[in-house]
Amino acid sequence: MSDSKLHELASPILLKGNDRIGYRDPTAVYDEGVFHLFFTLVETEEDGQIYMYTACSRSSDLLHWSAPQKLTSRDQHLNYSSPGNVVRFGGRWVMCLQTYPRENGEQYGNANSRIWTMESDDLIHWDSPKLLQVKGTDVPLEAMGRMIDPYLIESEEEPGLWYCFYKQNGVSLSYSRDLKHWTYAGHRDAGENVCILRHADSYWMFHSPENGIGILQSEDLVTWREREERFTFDQKQWTWAKGRLTAGFVLDACHSEVAGKYLMFFHGTGPEPEPLVFDTHACIGIAWSDDLLSWDWPQCEVNRM
Image (cartoon, rainbow, N blue to C red; front, top):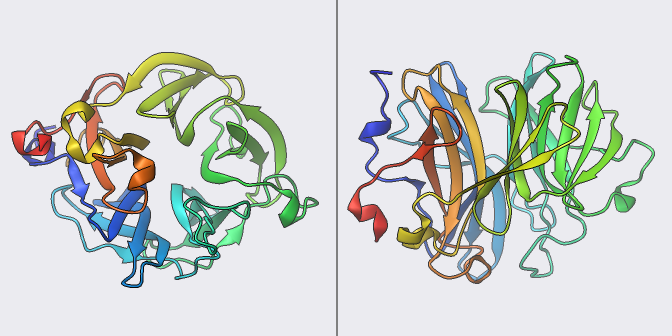
């Protein structure tokens, strides 16, 4: 579209991490002219203690973003993070997210990691998180197993039927009609941070293997086949993402005059391998596409440094 601001972006980096802050796991919503970007904010405090938050930044033009706002509590036993997506249900906004407990100094979330939802009327003020009992209400918390990276999607073939995908034994899935009572439906081979769109009469699942963004395709949200594409964009030239490029979330912003494209938000770490800089320096980047297969991004030479 003629009013697209994408050509004005001087860098693929929207939020830049440093030796104290990391930005990870983005998801986004476009509503009433505003892009709401949700993500994991990892903060290393002066004493070396590390805390994770679900946070938000907003923009009306994709060029200027508000200062990150923390939405969740400071608690290493919880570390609410990795917002998967935000959907409309029952007249409210519903965000799914994870807890990632690291209260004993773990590098990664321990066995108590679970998935949750928060609700909002305005995408700004959020209710307290509620546990997603995706294994069934009769399965106690301690028996659910470690699970992270949730994503919610409603079936197009059967409106009112919702699926929750989450990282456990590859990607697991459960279904529900009220987002409260869930039935477990098995698991499939896939990476993490899944994002699913309806496209060209099928469902496309963007997921993150060891590096880059891959695609699985399905006609029913249950049976998936892998496509050959693997997106890494300009990773070989991006020092900030050489360690790993991952966690791609695709937003259909084709009807937004500001974008007029599909937007992919992702995070990169580098130049060291991600395990060495897991809590610091991670940056959230952006790319865009007309067809979900060919992607573009700002090409300025400064972004290669």
